[in-house]
Image 1 (cartoon, rainbow, N blue to C red):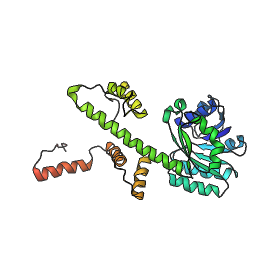
Image 2: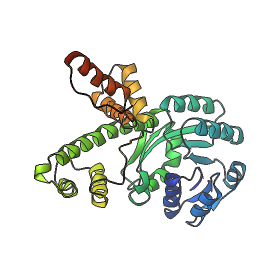
Image 3: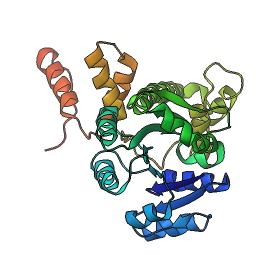
Image 4: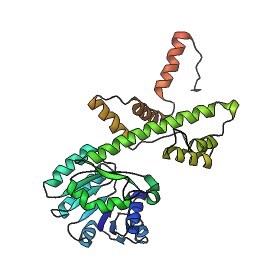
Length: 303
């Protein structure tokens, strides 16, 4: 089948390439002409505007967005909603907030348009391994686009599915990312503890490789940790700075709204915040209080 795709960052470009390889006709647009040209080399059809993209597609049309959450997604969907016709489908495969997806679906339905929110996981490995796709929205639109999902998934029978109504796909992806935070933090803490036991001289890369096969903590994240440790055993080339996409925050906020405790995910998010601070004030205050009540030694800045 045919599909329009907007947004050709690394994941969007890889998805377009996988679809072309699966026999689909894909028309692509991105503000970056170089990004379009790169995907055209893989067999996609490139255009220079949204209007041209829609003109190349036959009705009913389907357009897949891989653009950043927030204003970029909002403005792109608003433009598309004024250009598309009843029966057309907009698919948001980015990390939009599920509440935005619910609102957008309702608004687009008033214009006769379908909206699918597709939580997408797989990162830069998706081109080779396939993507995990969590689809929310009208079952009719899901069934129409199912050949696309089958092609993008790891296999025709695994890794994708219809989750529920509009917003549910992005909601499940949000929770997925929150779980990811906790798993990554547990690995990070465990490996740091092993590294601190200097008398054993533990080879962390070797340990990760052993764990990858047969252990109860084996996972794709462990595979990636092992690869990173093989490349740079001491991680000397990295700073201890960890960003977040926002989905961990949304997960914690949702836990507060629903009254469901998620202490591991919350703590993992807080550690990421701490990683971005140089000489955090709160820790300085801890040192100051110990000095005040117990006369404990402190380290001065020299100022």
